[in-house]
Length: 208
Image (cartoon, rainbow, N blue to C red):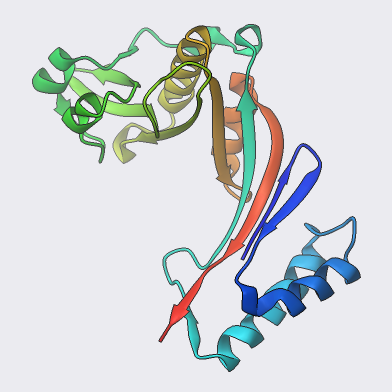
């Protein structure tokens, strides 16, 4: 089940077997589909369906509720957040620096995926990168990670601002998503200059 709101318009992608549950949900909560009461009611009906039809939840991400952000205007991005330690990932950095993130720097370069990293003492301690190659008029989603020992220094904020400004200058639209309850990433999006354009709620399950 996927319910997505984008600039006020709501759309659904659902498994055919739960049409009845979704229609009832829409009817009962029209205009307030993302309220706490509505989502609790939806979860209860989907849980009942899952149990009755021999499914089980995806334990890694069974219910996901995310906010969606977008950046289209280079002037809206606060580039004053970019620290001197943030720089575009290059082959020299990938080969010469000690990488403290879980990303493969060489794989990013091989796939031609843009990335900005924070270099501290010859180590890559934070990174912001995208999901696809940069092409004209593309919409690229930014993801960010900072090594645990180096958090709290606004490196993530710096790299998100740097890569967003860079991509916008190249003509791309930049997207950024984060869990609704995850306070820090949401603050980063607002500080950098992203506009919140929507949200999505998803539930996944599999056959036992």
